[in-house]
Image 1 (cartoon, rainbow, N blue to C red):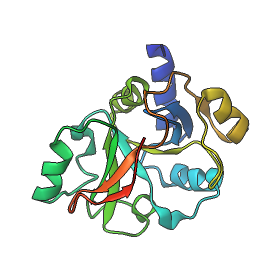
Image 2 (image 1 turned 90 degrees about the vertical axis):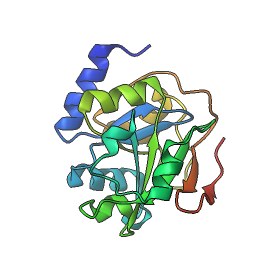
Image 3 (image 1 turned 180 degrees about the horizontal axis):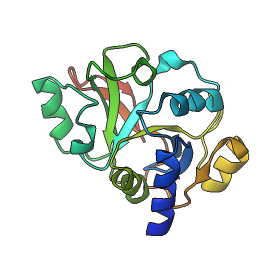
Length: 186
C-alpha cells in the first residue's frame, strides 16, 4: 500500500507544477493539477500528443469537480447514477476551463475514481487531477510504476507506486447527455 507520506510528497510536487505517474483502476496514468497550463503542456509534450485531444479530470468525489464542470440536469443524473465499472463521462465544461483541458470543445471528460491511490492524490491536493495514460501517444500503456519509468523516464517528476485496480485497461468513456459510448472499457 502507498503511504500517506508518499501521497503528501506527491501532492507537494503537483502543487509546485510537477507531472507525476500513479496507478488508476486499470492502467498507470500521468497527471498534474488542472489549473497549471505549463504542466498540462508538459503532459502533451511527454506523450507526443496533440492538444486538441483534450484530457480527463479525475477526482475522489463529485465535489472536487465543482468549478470545472457545468452539467445539465441530464448530465447530473448520469454522473450521480451508480456504475459497475470505472466510467469517464463527457459533460459540459465550466466556461472558465482552459481549452488545453477540453481540446477546444464546450465539454470536458471527468471520472470519479474509487482507486485508493488516485483518489488520495486528489484529496491531498484538494483538486481534481489531469489524468491520461502513462505512455507515448499510440504506444502501449504502462501497467506498473516500473513500466512508467521505462517508457517516460526522467520526464516525470515522481512516480507513485501502487497496485492497479481490478480492470485490465482504460476506463469506458460515455457522453453524459446521450449516454452514448465513445470508448468501451475493460
